[in-house]
Image 1 (tube, rainbow, N blue to C red):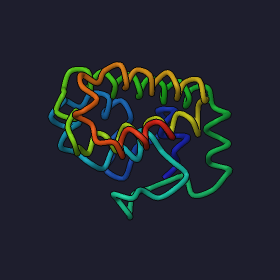
Image 2: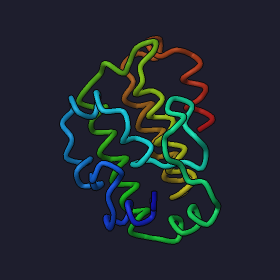
Image 3: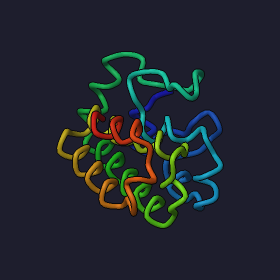
Length: 147
């Protein structure tokens, strides 16, 4: 998978979907489709949830994305898109929810590929969205704090 081209809107994933297609997902699709998040927010390590999922498997891929303003701008746009989904839907605010793992991935991807500042802004937004911190398990809060 060429993440740089995908993030620059010049390639599709293995199912022929573009980043634009993913941004057009309904809330139901975001909730139910599980193979897009590794593409929208790539990391340089395999997913713990999807062992066969794609990841940035070499430093040059990470460096190319960091050097592409278009890819970085689209990563930020993706974070706004996903944060909007979270803001509209509160089911993720409970003891255990797969969207909490997605939040960790989003923050880590922004830190890896865009900037520490952007990752911190995203993290702050997530913490402001939480209606009751007692609804989120402590382990997740620690993961987010370290992301």
